[in-house]
Image 1 (cartoon, rainbow, N blue to C red):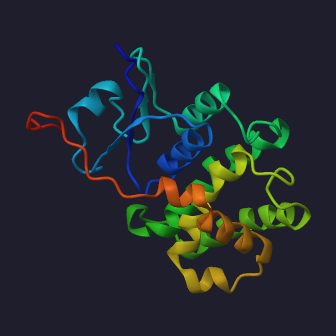
Image 2 (image 1 turned 135 degrees about the vertical axis):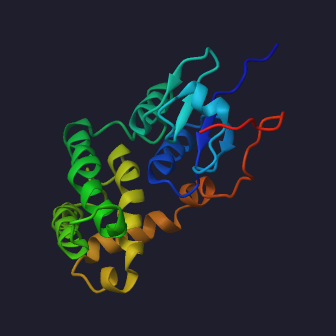
Length: 212
């Protein structure tokens, strides 16, 4: 009997799910892709990961990996043909800034109505400050940690994409030529196009019972 594929619960436009899919693709890891609607999460996903956020990876032995960065590391530890884990030093520090202060500013800029008392423009300025530090790195090398793509680029660029798309004209007018070129190259890359293919929403064989 053949081993079951790991199951990935994902949502196409979620930046955390995007980076998990990028690492799974880079590591040539086959998965059963289950596309979910965040407003109607399947009971199977909530049983595996009650926190109810994507991505969730359920391994064939039943082990559950429910953080996108952990999924990336699991996949690349298994197989890393492009050397994404090679530049270890600054890499995780950059990702921590992205996942902390930058994500906080991004959410308050993109969804100001969810954060009463927060000023969208102030948060945009905070986000821009962090992007300026990435611009300085990209002025020195083609990628965030040198001349080859690494986990840092894959982990961060989906969030920069979201920030850029919030007001494309404003973003295009900023003095970020290297970052803008880096983002455009990622968006046009074959691996990104592959992981952004549309999947029908997954439904269990039986009709979903009511769940929250």
